[in-house]
Length: 264
Image (cartoon, rainbow, N blue to C red; front, side, top):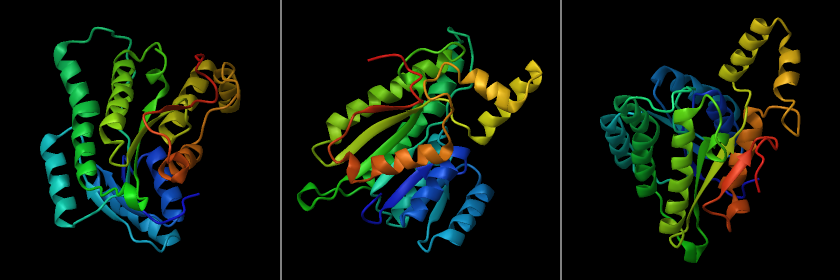
């Protein structure tokens, strides 16, 4: 889909969706900067990508919940003079909870790990971009969030707040950086069959005494497409938002939920 090779930062690279995104982008000939917490998993992913893509990629371990770790990440990119054409930011999502009024210390931890830290890393990524609108060079940022950014979901009390915060931040950045040629969009995912989500389906199926396939049918009955998404489908959407397809798109919250969200 993309017309030219780019250098793209992908955070959460070793997760189920992150790995699919990296595989898709590397296969399209892009050079990647892989970012996640676990160096061993990053090395393994780098090796797997090298088997199918001739384009080299590098990895940098970072804990987005730690200011010090983000500063070290910035220093490594600066030292390597890494210039980015795009970034895929996948902030850690709070675990499901029905507690609408958690203690203040819990909120502080959640915001640090899921918003403040990732936003600091995004600031680093922006500092390494060199858009040039006059020459047709635009930089693209995709922030991967969840469907509760569009509507409140039960059992996702803290996540509802964080995801809305990212949509608002993306719109703010779209205004602040649009003239410079930086596009910022959010991709809000519905149920996506990443490995951990599949494990949840299997667990719920066992608890209900039904098969995995029967549980999937039951859980997707309220989704117009009658299915969950796949990491590979998410990767294709991300690739599109990084490509010339989005040259006149910024500040958008794009739903990738099979039609689940009921809103205009």
